[in-house]
Image (cartoon, rainbow, N blue to C red; front, top):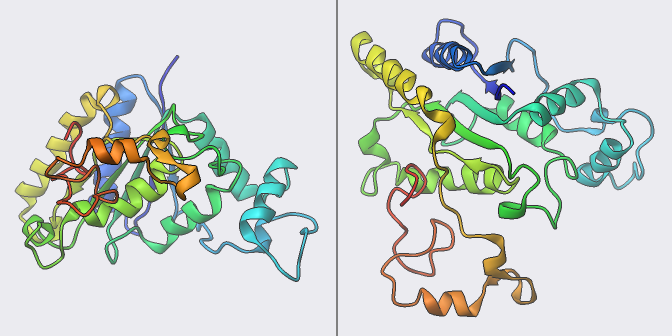
Length: 271
């Protein structure tokens, strides 16, 4: 069966570098026999606001409205709004999800954050029992592909913006890995607005080359869920902490044990 790819795309301009990167992905993956679907959020006029309007019919507790619980119930009962149902259909069918966007304020644009907030509902995308390495989407792969406004040096460990690995941790661990996705290394297009057209073309060719082997790439490494002890507030199990005591670096960017964070662990697989 053909591999199904969903590209969640967020840019206002069809003439942008992000649009070109999206088109390259569609072209190369389609040529490999993949079925590619694109959610063009701005073209769709996707509503980023998570409200009670996402539920058809009566809510359980209008006075003390809890979005997560209400949308989980609505999902179970088939009462989510039509736009959410359609995006969840696309996501359920996908084997690979690519988020293509310009980095705004060190994260995704508001319209894409709204897609995440509204589409990845409790029950559909995660539960307290099914998250991280035991997550609902553990058979799927996902990745970030994005442009920056700053140069690579500015996102280094001694750069003014700080280490890009720290910047990416909330997105790649706190959203993608949280839902169980196998997270592929990000495709980062460093400051395309500030380089020549020839250099931008080189960037796109590198992306084209990577896409040829994307489906066979190994994902980034995260600490397995069973390494944490629920009886200790989901802290790292003492036996694992003791085993790692002599290491110079922490386990991950987030679970660093007060040590140096593992270098490049959020931008390269196998480190």
